[in-house]
Image (cartoon, rainbow, N blue to C red):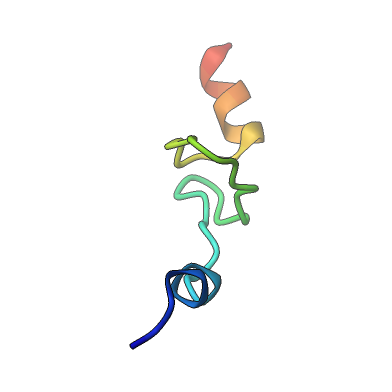
Length: 43
C-alpha cells in the first residue's frame, strides 16, 4: 500500500485550463487558473 505522502508526490502538476501554464499550488487553494489568467478576469 502506498503512503499518503508518496501518493501526493506522484500527482501530476496542476495546469491552467486557460493558457496551459503550470499553476503554483498553495495549501487550501481550490483555484484552477494561474495568477495571470485570474488577473485578466478581474479587469
